[in-house]
Image (cartoon, rainbow over all chains, first blue to last red; front, side):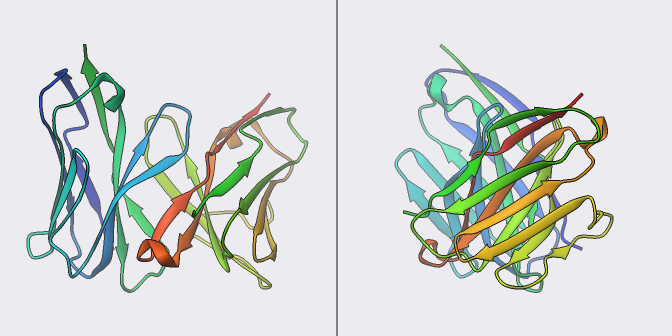
Length: 113
Length: 116
């Protein structure tokens, strides 16, 4: 069974610092890996999706890498801003269980002005 | 594109009553939708997979009779929490797979259910 772990569980940084969020998964047979942002009491906003054949994806200040062989994905957020404060979730879409996204517990990020 | 609209965003109901949550795909057809539940400070847990025109598939441990799912059209799936109890209080969120998002998933805004 796929297990997804996110470290750290919480992170507080001053504005301007770069953020590094880690996600590890136990089963490398994934279709894709997706990063989401969740604000308190809100739904999920998709940030980046990395297909299994890709190594990384970039969108603005966000960059996500994927290393299937080691079962890891990393989300980098450059030059953090207070508006980046949220919980960040990674989710693995396994090839043998279509649609059953396996989520990590999330990393709660606080960016202080 | 790829917007999933979920209503209501918040609902408070009395114990023993039923609550219906709607999830609509606004600009695409979703033959399959997914329903998740999220407890405070925890991640999302898949409850069931909703298939248009057929019965939903429930995850182990999820009561089919308590959480009724209907997917009557390609753009609408509903989750009805029947005979709600305080322990059903949670954050419910739906999702659909969007083909042009490289088969990524788009999520609704969630429903906060409080049973008193």
